[in-house]
Each structure stands twice: as structure tokens, then as C-alpha cells.
Length: 195
Ligand SMILES: [Zn+2]
Image 1 (tube, rainbow, N blue to C red):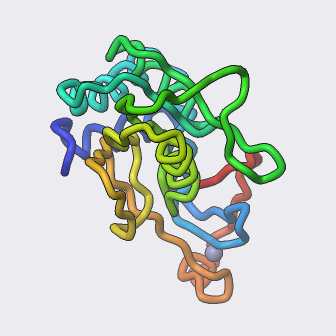
Image 2 (cartoon, rainbow, N blue to C red):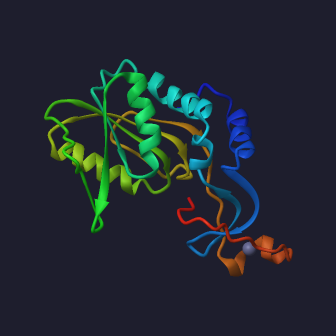
């Protein structure tokens, strides 16, 4: 279901804040892309964090959510803001030795309605692992909300789900990259965690 905010306005916000760069990039995967995307850059600005978290909170406000949980690290900022807007407990799950778990004395209580919140979803792996924690605690999955859907339409969740922006990932193998074919120089963004 599309956001009420016009997608081109959202894209402009991502461009203005440097969350979305356009050019010719080598991602950490080694693949080439005409885009480099780093969602955290847009969320450093309170007004945009509020805008996008507000979209998610509004979408789920009548779902009787009692707990918000996010996968660390990317989801924590937006999860915390969505939880604040909904006025509910907000926790996060984190990976230890590759396993997603709940630490720090956080708990998911049996029967409570839980909203899973993430910043960017590509394969959905982290979100699915958090959903497994929710189900394992015998809580109810009330929904899944994320700011950006990078799954190119491949993603499904067994619950009500909502993204503010759909931004399909475009990647090429270096040997098949049309930008390389045009002789354009390639940039390696310094950060880990390319989406
Ligand atoms: Zn290339």
C-alpha cells in the first residue's frame, strides 16, 4: 500500500540529505549501482525522522499495538520514534554470534500485540528473525512497518505491512555494468552497510 506522501517528494528529501546519491558506485557486495543509499543520513534530521516515523505510526495507530521492536542497529532510531508516537514500550533485538536475540532485560510478553519496525528492508532477513522472536514469545504480530522497501517487490510478510517509500535496488555485475561500459569512473562509498 503506497504512502500518502508523494513518492517524488520523499525521493527529493532523500536526495537533499545525501541519503540517496546518484552516479556510479561499487557497493560492499562488489556489485555496481547507479545509486548509493544510506537511510541513516535522512534520519539524522529530526523533522524527517518525525515525518517518516509519523507515517508509520499513523498507519498502525488503530492496531492496538502494545510493543514496538526493531532489529539493531538501523531500526532502533525509527522504532524508538514510532514507539514514542504510539505511546508504547519500545525495545530492540540484536545479533550475537549471528543469532538475533533480545538482551538487556527486554521482554516480549505472551499475548501482547507487537509492531516490528525497520528502516530499510531488502531481503527481509532481519525482520523475519525478529518476527520469529515475537512468535516464539507467544505474542501477536500486529504489523510490520519500514521506511524504505528495497525488495523490488519480492517481499511478503504474514501480517499487515507498510512502507513509506518503495525504492527498487538497481545493481549490475561489474562485467555487465552499463555505466562501466560508458567509461564512467566508479566510486566506492566509504561506509559499510550499503543497502
Ligand atoms: Zn560499473
